[in-house]
Image 1 (cartoon, rainbow, N blue to C red):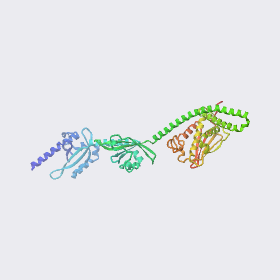
Image 2 (spheres, rainbow, N blue to C red; image 1 turned 45 degrees about the vertical axis):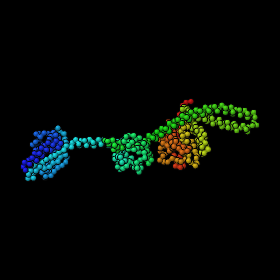
Image 3 (tube, one colour; image 1 turned 120 degrees about the vertical axis):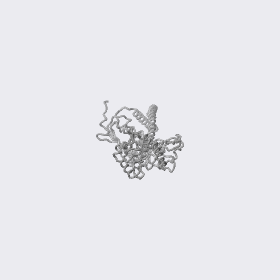
Length: 499
């Protein structure tokens, strides 16, 4: 029996000493090393000859000893208890190791504690790897959160398993995690425009756009696969890019291009009209001359000739007005401007619009004592015409359509008031009406019937043009009753050059 026990003891010692993956250290009650296996040599770097008989304190960092953690382990051993937990130990080259240590008391044949046996597993590499993974994860999440676009990851069951701050902010917080992504858009099941997972897996899924009507936003959605090692689909990264402003700018750019094309066409029409007016003048002069000669020779047919002469004079006035406006619009030279005369010319020109001529009640009140100002004709004609056309558009659905145009002055300024009986401007809209591209009218191609359209450039252009003259445009409006624009033009800065 004694032989058998000695054999077992020898075998156990051989196993303990030969283990290379686990450090096994035995110490006596004075903390002196009595057993130092090959695993301890490999992990801690000391040979058995270097440590046998040496107190174990050298193995622990100073702060670990100062924390009295090692002393606490020793006290537990003396009570016959076992310790399991992580401690830090110093390798021979000075590197601090993280060791998962299990310490049990060693007893003699009487059951008294005579030493301690410590079995340690080196966690350093695994802990460093875990720390690197956690650091990479934090970096990835920080990058994830720094992206202003909405990003989330969904699994194959369409549940959101991760999202960035932009997603939480837009969709209302972290509660979106582990909910199906289609609920973000209010669908009871998978979104009808969502690409199939197979298309995403083989990277053939095309991006798509959708509109969030509750917030007036437009998103372009991209989906990227996260694959398993075998090529199967693990998850999908969904990126939602807000393209609302880009889409609006694109539409407004198209509107602006169309407007420039239209203005180019109008310029060509103006030149054509000027040529037509010139060509009409010659035969018209001949007709009027012949009619007057005929009247002189045959006064008895005055009753028949008078209507002809009257209508010919009407044509002459229209041609003269057209020629004058075309010439003035094409000139960028500054000149003396009589704003009353300019207003009358523009209002006369608007009579070509039959709705304006026959369906709009007009009230004009011009102060005949207005001084001339110095400016470019088209700057003021374009501004006034824009405001008048806005007034006419505002009365599109009004039962009573009345346009009021008034001029007056004080010591320093000339005032032009243009009022309508249209729909009025809401208080929340009023501060924005002079902003570029802001309009409450439908864009071209979106109007119903003959509904007026807009680009949002009219009033902003007016303000920009008149800014050069120190002029201001103000507006007062009452919803459902109408709007009045007032153009305030300084008199003093208009210094005429010597003529």
